[in-house]
Each structure stands twice: as structure tokens, then as C-alpha cells.
Length: 185
Image (cartoon, rainbow, N blue to C red; front, side, top):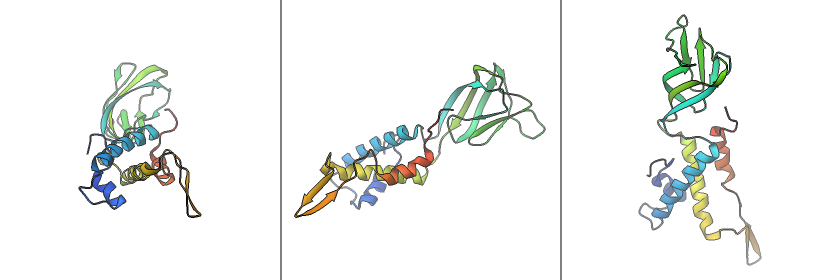
């Protein structure tokens, strides 16, 4: 499994009902890497747990959604160069957060351009099973399409078979849509 892959060779082989050690394993490994990258591009996000520094514009509010989600920890928060402490109770000023939202007590995200800096860790320690399933579907689709690239239908002995011509199968799109970031924050 290459770094950044969202599924494993064993998962794909199980879906395709292929034996381990089959002749197409190198092709499948390549398709897994390509499909994983495609899924992250299509969803406009990275899935693996990693560090980010978000530079944001202050909105003069006490709440701010994170650009990268889900957030698991915040290393530091500064507003207009001032360090904001973590608030460990409802009576203590500072910041607190959910996986999607950063909130303040006793402070505001003062209005400004690029005046909020959030050093955080976001993503999934384990890739969600549904994401893995979506990537498996894309890999299987690409693998099966290999014999009929560009073909929309085929007629044999008076019987016509039609093929889907899309970037990914509808079921994969439906699964991954739950993780897609479509609007900038």
C-alpha cells in the first residue's frame, strides 16, 4: 500500500473476486493510488490525519468553521498576533472546538484580512470504511473498463450491452459525496 492510498490491494481483490498473487496486482496497485488521488481531488480534501496551518480572515464573530475537518487537536490559535489560550471550562476565556467548528469565550475573531492563524491537526486516523468502499468501487470500475475503454455499447448476436461512461460509477460518487467539500470557507 503506497502512502496516501485509501484502500488496500486485498480489499480490491476481494471486491473483484481475484486471488491474491494474480497477474494484475501491479496494475491494481497503480489504480488504487490513482483512484485515491482522484477521490481526494474530487472531494477537495485530504483524508489522512495531518498538520495544517489555516490563515483566515477574522469575521467579527465568536464562531469560525474549520477549512480542514475533522479537527482532532489545536496546537495554537492567534488573532491579530495575540495568542489565545484553550478554555477548559465554561467560565474560562479562550477557545474550544468541535471537529468542525472553532468557538471563543471572552474573545472575538476581530475583523481583518489573514489576521487569524490556527495551527491544528485534522483528518482521520483511520480512513472511514465508506471512503474505502468508494475508492474500491472506482478501482473496480477502472479495472473492468480496461477492456472497453471509450466503448459505450457493444452488440453481439443481436444483443446490445451498454456501458456507463463517467469519471466514476454512480455508487462511488454517492458514497464520496458525503465527504465532499464544495464551498470554500
